[in-house]
Amino acid sequence: MRLLKRKLLARRLQLVQLLRAGHHALIPLLCVALGCAMTARAFAVDLAIRAETVYTMAGEPIRDGVILIEAGKIKQVGEASTPIPDDVRTIAAKVVTPGLIDAHTIVGLQGFENEPRDNDLLDKSGPFQPELRAIDAFNGQERLLEWIRGFGITTIHTGPSPEALSSGQTMIIKTIGPTIDDYLLKADAMVSITLGPASLLKDAGKSPGTRAKQIAMLRAELVKAQEYARKRTAKPQPAADASSDRAEDKTPARDLRLDVLVTVLNNEKPLLITAERAQDILLALKLKDEFNISIVLDLADEAYLLINEIKAAGVPVIIHPTMKRAFGDSENVSMETAGKLRAAGIPVSFQSGYEAYVPKTRIVLFEAAIAVANGMKFENALASLTIDAATMLGVADRVGSIEAGKDADLALYDGDPFEYTTHCIGTVIAGKIVFDGKR
Image 1 (tube, helix red, strand yellow):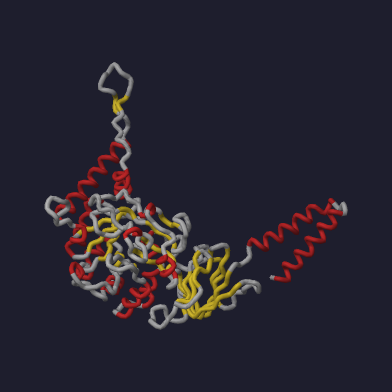
Image 2: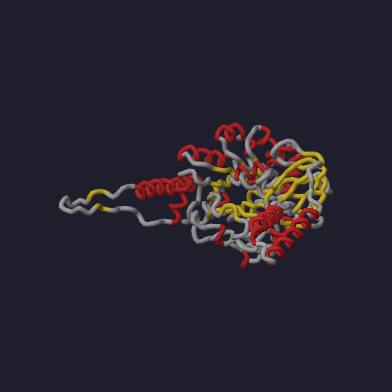
């Protein structure tokens, strides 16, 4: 490669000298030479990675694999015989996986020190505010982003905390900033809904105070959105006065809240329904059927009691943190739930979740490792952290697997990713090395 570049440079200088001497007939040849040089640069590889095992998540693992990266994308994935240009930086690792995905977190909306000034998790002015957007509160310079990408996490689905009937909309972004415009995958991914005690207001006179009130309020808003959509798309009616040619326009004014719910009714985005107990999960499934909408179950602590119902509904689950503390509404939580759901054919992904009392975040790599230790197969757990999560979030065209043309988001390890003694030794996002150490 270096020899080719030297030859092209020498030929270009020679042609420039001839052109200056008056040999204008050589202009076409000069253009060809310059074009060749530009082509050589345009197709140059930026980074190469060698690994004893490459889990592409698009087929069988590749032993002694090579990954070539160009312009932030994966250019080629192959075996050890894949040629690597001499002047390209090459990184070695024992194991390489696609960049990991945290399928539900609050990172970027809560500061690492848990200070009130950094807390944009929940607006308490009302119980139902789906029009609020995570993207309007996200802090791309939050230090927790740096922390989690040091474990190989390259994409997060983040949003408000599940403490209201609807606390707003979520977003999907990569774990590198510094602004929300950098590496944003989806500005408005899902609409957050919480069923069960987490969003009940027990104070006298405040709604919702019961599960029945929760569902009644939610159904009422969806019905209102149906009527709003009908009126927004209806043609103006003839004027009541027959002598007038003017049509009567009764189109309602724009309403941000109802606009969001219309996208849900049109199946343009799903409801992310946080439901821990079995009775709340069942309510979520009934709501899905009544309005023919898409939902994703969140937490689902007692999902193992409803495996047949969840599978029949075709609903994916962002499972609770495997090491979630068992108390209150989570008293029946189980470390085996992820494995049981996945074994039944239900799509599962992992999350770091939300707990208000701590100025930190969980790491989904360890949550998945605990699931493996409790019955989940290795390949299923890795899929739930990568391609299955990407598919569930609707971003599998960009991330989740190591394939030519996809974003070059990779996690590098010095051993089995799910072993406690293994370290993440490198993280790559869009072809850039964003972590190079040992964590």
